[in-house]
Length: 140
Image (cartoon, rainbow, N blue to C red; front, side):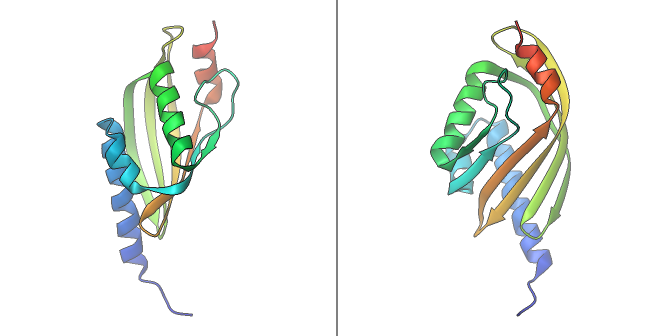
């Protein structure tokens, strides 16, 4: 078994994730799609009050999640504050402020995004955040 060049793989993974955040911030889904594997697993915790909640499979699932998010949430601020990378995984720690479109209520939460890279593409994007405060913002 050979030893991988960890630094090179870590730099590559971090570069892909940074490019994905630039694409998300610019709402550039075409650039984001180029960074994502066709069989990506995309999502976060399930919660029946949060329309975009849950995990979806494949490029179509990722686009569905983004479409639902755009229709039901306004991201007021998405502030990645720290990127921790090792080999093929990047953890992004940050803070977000979101308005639930159906109610007009705004919530704030810290988040952690775990992003896994394989063959130069994102294969998994998993989000962790305070689903209680988010669900309360959607509650009528």
